[in-house]
Image 1 (cartoon, rainbow, N blue to C red):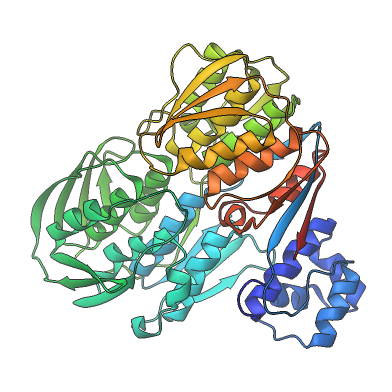
Image 2 (cartoon, helix red, strand yellow; image 1 turned 45 degrees about the vertical axis):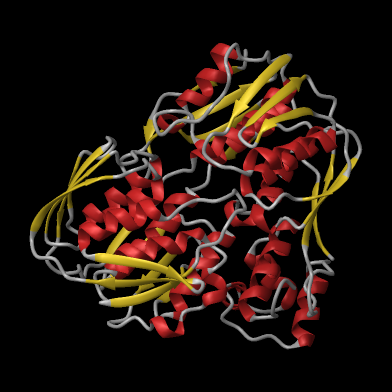
Length: 511
């Protein structure tokens, strides 16, 4: 196991192994002569298991993975020269999920998040939330999560180790400022992407009487209550998490907050829709100016919200189809947040694809399409590829263009002006046969096309670069091994099993 052998950890291993086998909970229950509800309890981490029971489950799953031990690492063994076919559905948004988990702290009633992904980033936040007293329970089918916060949150009992493994912990600042005059949060972790300052968060929260001092491994916050007022807040960067933090603070601060240079990205729109369910009035959703009329008291409502689909996962699946030269249909693609990427791929690089008519997501807000990718010979775009705040090319989608450029004929410049380290991680594509040259910490030159070749390597410690390596391995000759893929599970649910259903050959194993 990675870290300690807890019921939750064992449950996740069992769930992953079961899905890798393509078994349902009912089928595993039949193998073990037990009930589906018992399997659900085990996989949810609500059941202590004896060594004998663990071994019985391992036998039923034909998996040696579920074993107690001091330490082990999850890896992928990937068969190359893959051809994918069929249809795959875009899952719900990781980044919206983590924002909504933080926002549940605002609601003193019951919150149901429908369609939330079982990913490690969600698991880390749930570990933090439950450690401070929030009750969390999954529906029998595992699709919906019900959260009920206590009257008083137990911040002294916070799972600091889990909190340090996710940058999303920063978004506790806005909600907690409503309920505490003083609190502390562990320094944020997550992907290794270089230095990312939290100063924009601190600047915006000062408008709500929140002062933050970073010291000794913690952010220490003190709160001075402000009365009903009109606040004019200009964000110094159009960041997603700083906009979300500011929105959550504004939602439960009496008066009017005008937030300028706000992100209008997909996860921010999801958060706005959720806050409006709680009774918060927000004007300007989908624009860079948000006007929030805050509540005088924290809401206490029973609400249910269906999370929108993830445009970054959609881009991952588009890349999988392109790099393997496959015809693949990707359903429930949030088109508003992938239009720029498709325009670059289609109009500038020569990708052939088809779109269905639009329809609405379960949140009633997000526009969806079904997208079919056709095998295409790509050419390098005439200009550099660089991200911009929405509605520009999404910063999280930029790494996929390194793989796409490596399949294209010609030379492409990739300019990642946001992060210091992420472009460096993409150099690892060279180990698979690509020709990637680092000009400086922010700029890459990619020369294609590439004859991908399989090899054994360690996953980079950043989510999107790690997935690009995995996708390139699908097209490589021979068999590849990608070690230590925890970071991929931070953002994707059952990705190997879902790709295997399309024709891939990905085996998960531990060492």
